Length: 173
Image 1 (tube, rainbow, N blue to C red):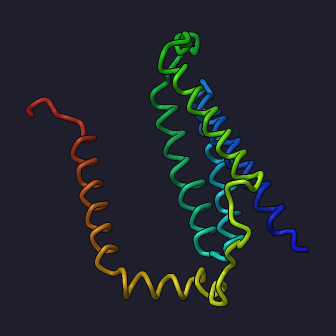
Image 2 (tube, rainbow, N blue to C red; image 1 turned 90 degrees about the horizontal axis):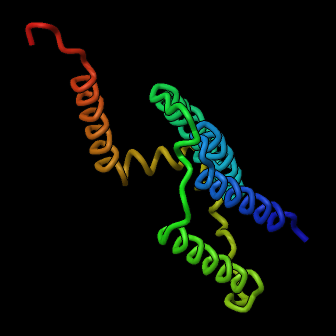
Image 3 (cartoon, rainbow, N blue to C red; image 1 turned 90 degrees about the vertical axis):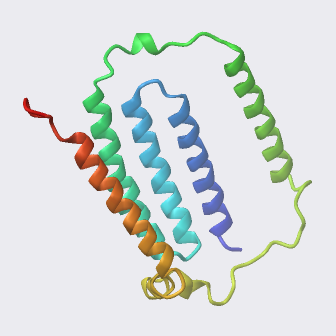
């Protein structure tokens, strides 16, 4: 018997736990740390799917660069006293708790096997070659070259806009 399903369920439980802790956390720095843990769990799930490049990019780009930016913005905002962030129980919070309970019941129904067919799909024979750098590069620069270039232009426009908005005004402007 393979240990892959056990590893999957452990990683999935860790990903869900860190996501929930990230959302319910009042301290923004701790919330960012839980988000980093979630990114690492997702990278490990990518490895289970034989997508090595996506796993490495998940760690480098999201857990590395994006989270440094998020923590930098949190520190720059200097939110101050956390006691002002306390909320009272209201209708939105009650609705959220109800929806979360319904979601947990649905997940329990699925995990007990009542809502799942016995035929579980398996990975195709080409799965080990799909997640490699060569296969991803080939798909990115042949099939998806137009969306890739449009994305690069959008990122360039966002960078130029951020530089223009972030520049300091002088006295004669």
